Image (cartoon, rainbow, N blue to C red; front, side, top):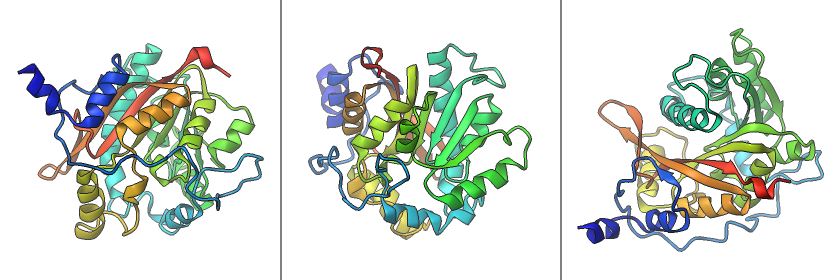
Length: 307
């Protein structure tokens, strides 16, 4: 019985268990195999030499085409029925995972109204601030960064409407630029960002460099599986029109084992992982052990490699 259960697990699930025996999945249950996928690409090499440059001596890992794509719809960030509707719907579930893992790591009370009191948290690729604002309301000292200036303007305008979020520090910059400035944060969060960068390995190195000693890193993205192609691109972009066509490139998605290894090389050890599953009947997202489409990972900075 045990052997058949093991065989029913996806390849990445078994690899994660083999390489990270102490890592937690959401429930430890086997997940449904989404089908065969291409062999992992070399995500450690830049995909394009035409990188978005900043005033920093360090080039950004972002793609200029991705910046233009999100700048075109930046005015709709706070329209819960607009192009960012999926993120608005997913936000409570993302926050539930963040609250649980960060409270456990920093020994905070998850039942407190302000469990992140005093924690310095950066929201990398903050967009219009739909994640930064609830983090601030939970007591965190929040910095939100985005390379699209229009996103930052929208985020500042919206945050200033509420005294509990008006102290968020929004900056039009990149993670690489803040690394040059030697900024450090207790928790570094990058949700649905890594699939839009040109060099995921360099991006993760920047996230690691921003993470303070004994700090935490949270990254979410989409798995490069047949199910994710069907759900996140064919269904979400072309059939249901939840997202603008061309929002995602399937080849830029990362499998859980790829993300785990990239973070490991950047001195971040993945400790916990969960999937996001959408219920079409209730219209709600929930945390699951199924990491075949959307998933989120929590990791901690390796102290023996502290810079």
